[in-house]
Image (cartoon, rainbow, N blue to C red; front, side):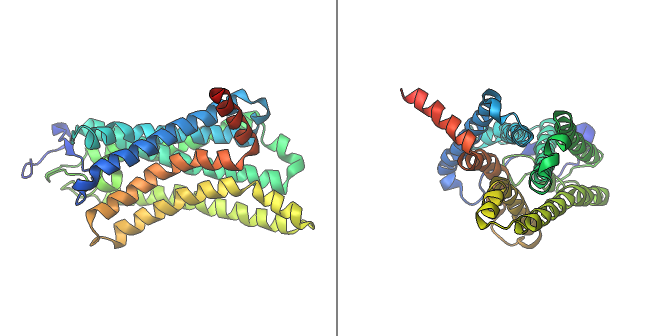
Length: 314
């Protein structure tokens, strides 16, 4: 395959990679990934179950949390087939179409998560800065509109990516750097001119992740200004405490993303497993930690979870 040229009609397969340079440690990686998947899938499913069953949680903030949990499940299930195939069954080859589909869904859910974090920051802004208008601003219909907007925006941004790759010829070995298909990995493989792909990729990153992070930062600047105007120190801390879960979710989503980008740009001489581990953190840690954080920091979810565990125990 190495010397042959393939165009999109030839549909060349791709070779997935586990942990290059750390093959002897891959059995430990299987255990770690199994734990991450279990916590992510069980944790997010529990969050959805608790919000559905607990009537007091039928509020905009928890509707957005439900959407975040569904999205985190989507991220987990997008990577699960090829990660299992690569690490557990040592099946390294993936077809062109399957790789394009996986790339689409991984980035689709990642872009949705950024949009969900943005609307959650708007929820906190309205709740703290305009509490009397909260019920009229964040109606059920508006919550649905905001959720659908995040999904449609992500679809419109990601849909052209596989189409832009389909037009290019592939003439390299088509060996990927990860156990799943990412656009940043695939864009290195074509022999043709990828200028349009790079420009479009930069555009969607700036117009989604860049814009969303700036608006989230702005919302917290306004929230902080409003909180500092509260006379009571106890009330200030109580108000800020309602934002802690969301701030943690933003932190664990954007920091690994920046780390992956920095490693790709400035860490070209780093061992290959460094890039693999960074991407694993980016894709696996947020879906695992989000339900843990919200279970710990949200009193109603924590109480309901304790009831479920006590029922199982007795």
